[in-house]
Figure 1: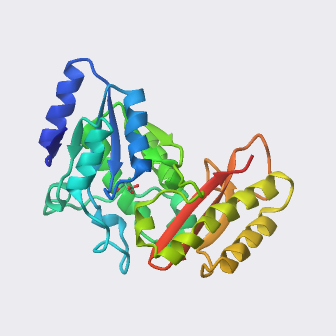
Figure 2: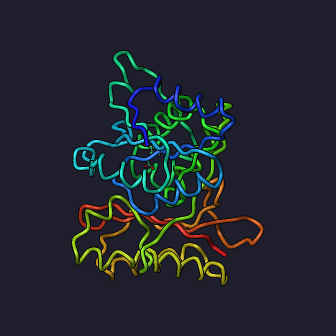
Length: 281
Ligand code: PAF
């Protein structure tokens, strides 16, 4: 697996593949890789002939007081995992390559970013939209794959790709979970042993809420119960537990089998902020 650090080298590699008639998948990451990321590569290899991964801890998507400095960085370990999964190219730019002096362009997706993590982390999705727009333009891949754990991020990316006429197909990848249900996340490594033992309560609480809503409970009732279950499991009051339309992220007031909807939650546990979501079905 080659490692490149410039837009020019990324473009040269991708256009070389395309000149051979190969289809290219892009899997953007911030490193600290786990099996969820490797599933993106696996899906990329099903959807295309070659996979290019990105590795860049994007500073513009971290707010003041968030974990930018502490975010785990181990390029050698990440590169070995990607190569083992069949990734063909690693694009690992530095901040100067991504945001050179004079950089002044913002990308903001409105509406979808007002709720859930957008409300809890002001500016976060502006940074995500900015960096992902750049990756899509830089790589010009046929398909780009993003994990469904960050469902709202995926919705924002689908919106910006459609609105800005970016031809790369955007594909969601199912959440990969630990055996006890905890959604895999780079931030799980912040959890102490006791916090790790409590963490699966997040998934359990939203699964129960989704089942209750599908059986006729109101979202307010079921999500309120889930928030109480989290507190009982040792979490502080969660940032949110909410049932929303899967595409528009509008709040729902009940289950409609014709309109896909999900229960979303975010909660802090020690140094980690955990997010998760499940389908209501
Ligand atoms: O999901 C992530 O890891 C990041 O938000 C992304 C999409 C790589 C942009 O930095």
